[in-house]
Image (cartoon, rainbow, N blue to C red; front, side, top):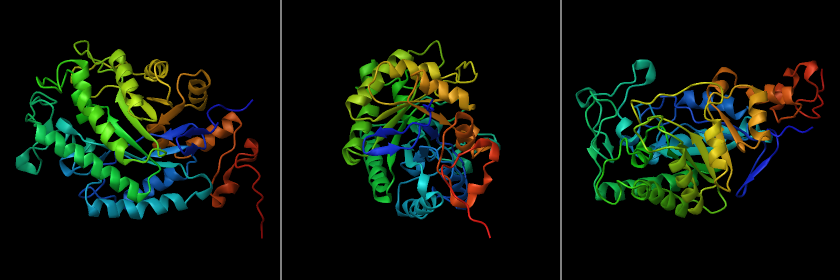
Amino acid sequence: EMSRLFEPLQIGDLKLANRVVVSPMCQYSAVEGCAQPWHTVHLGQLAMSAAGMLILEATAVEPEGRITPGCLGLYDDATEKALAGLLPVLRSVNPSATPALTLQIGHAGRKSSSRAPWDNGQQIPRSEGGWLAKAPSPLPHLEHEEAPAEMTAADLDALEQRFVDSTRRALRLGFDALELHCAHGYLLHQFLSPVSNRRTDEYGGSLENRMRYPLRVLAAVREHWPAGKPLGVRLSATDWDSDSSWTIEESAIFAQRCEALGADWIDVSSGGVSRHQKITLGPGYQVGFAAEIKARVGIPVMAVGLISEAAQAEAIVAEGKADLVALARAFLYDPRWVWHAAAELGATVGAPPQYWRSAPASVGRLFGDTPIGMR
């Protein structure tokens, strides 16, 4: 019986070889927003993985939108040039099975100007080279932090244009797909959640108002991203905070509105906006949210969150809980995760010919019919 995880999936004009996705993972290793040799080596391993899609780390649409000074950006000629050098390398290392190269664009909002996680992850004071964050409302993420500046109507217009500019640059670079980051407590999620949005204008209060700016940005990005090229949205399904109304129900309504505006997939994560969040962690702890969103939309849905075993990923797709399965930490621990999953599930994958001899005899035709001559 064929593995469902290794079935192809058509999204717009893009055909994915399988349902495995490399989830975006911040590396905090850019310089002034520019990709470095680290990104070439890190993403090069993942490009060899034979996953269906590889989503680059959260990429800021302006310098102030970076989570940390080490975060990737796509907002000027220098950052575009750095990515322009990276993409051909990623496409060259496993040409028979290059994942769909996808850029996740976003803005950190009040969670910007932070140190890298291994450097305590706290807000960098302006006196130490940090910058004033901006957000829907002047509410700091943590009580002791400097409050962000509340965004004005002019700020909202300017930032929408930043998203459009980054979209145009991504198109020029030749990315296969784009994902809009509306999750994890970053700016667009900050508009959606009443935890972080206390505005009294048309962008705050009711669900309709809180959705208005993220949907406005999505519409602007969609207008400048060609119809056949897929555009996804990542959302946080719940704030994990009993005092917040941002729950799976509001997320489902938001997902439906994204679909109506031309989104091609919904990537379902959770949390990140509330310092009071209480998350019950466990294998596949967010998969139920993906299943609930999938029941409400007609576009593919991506599940993510402590998915590490091949059988677990197979079951998520086979049982119809999600169309795609995204892994992050599992890929850092095992960049060959897709190969090992294919061996376990009786599927074949494309691999660089330099590695064809690596498959143990016990796994059979992992790389298909790949005759190896010896001298």
